[in-house]
Every structure is written in structure tokens, then in C-alpha cells.
Image (tube, rainbow over all chains, first blue to last red; front, side):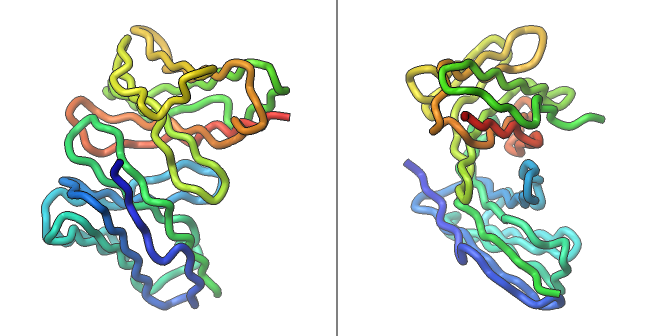
Length: 111
Length: 113
């Protein structure tokens, strides 16, 4: 089945630093999504990417849909303590089909 | 403008009991997905339902697990005769007709003792 590989698995950064994480797939996806999960909560949608090569921003977050449609990255600029959490990438090929998730990147921010 | 609502947030069951997890999708959403998350793991797809129909249950264990999404009321994930290995967080997500974006509830954390 389809699998998404996220890297790094975890990262510790200083407050104010920029963060980059990525997600690769063994097969093509038509849509990439990035979610954040806070401890004890459900995943919250951050950014959705619909087109190969697309670069989309949401505040301090920027995500790109790879040209090959097999990868995506998420950047966070000027990290703050509330950025702590688990970031998941997810892919799908059409509407109303289950998302395939990566195992997440666990981000810790040191003040 | 309520989001996806799940209840209970926490559920404790003894081995052999039944667990019932409820999910009310966002207003206007008719598609519901259930996922399971083990500690330190990602989200594993279990089942996808529309009103009164199971569309894809490829991720659901064949025994003891069932799901429904009736015409009226919330979607229910039922786990019969729970075992310790069923302890996990169960998340429900919903999407609009034709939508690719799924929105999640806060989850139900099931603990089997």
C-alpha cells in the first residue's frame, strides 16, 4: 500500500530558528495536506496543496508540493514555543477518499 | 459553527466490555472517516462511511470492530469484547461531498484495564 515517510522523526530547536521538514511517498498523490497535532488534541489542518509545484503560505508556515508529486516540505519561520507539537503530512488522490498519513515529525522548541 | 464533535473524550473499559465511540461530523459534511492512533505513532485509517453506507472498511479489524453512520444521528464506532491492545486514541474526521480536506475531532482516548 501507499506509504508516506516523514523526516526528521523529531527535532529540537531554539526559539526563533527556522524549521524544515519533509515528506516523501512511494507513489504519486494529487493533493498533499499538512496537519499539526497538539498533545491530547486532534490534528488541525494547516495547509493544503492541490497542484504540483505549488508553494503556499499560511502565516509563518510555507509548504510546497513537489514537482514529481511524490514529495512535499513544510517550513516554519521564526519558531515560537506554541509551535511545539507533531506535524503530519497526508496525501490523497481524489475527493472523499481516506487520507494516507506519515508517522509525523515531533517538534520541540527550546525557549 | 461547530467542528467535528467526538464523545466521550476519555473512555475506560474493562477487558471483555463493549466500547461505543460517537462522532458528529461538521455541518454540511456527509462523509466520515475513523482513524486509530497508538502512542508515538501516526494515524491509521480504519473505515470510511457515508450516510447509511460503509464505503471502505479495509483498515478495520475483521472481528469485534464495527461502524455505522445512520440516516439520523452520529457515526458510531463499536468495539466489542475489548482487549488491552485496543487502548488507543480514536479520531473521527469529516469532509464535504467531493472534498479532499478532512477535519478532525478531538478524539476519544480508550483505555482498557
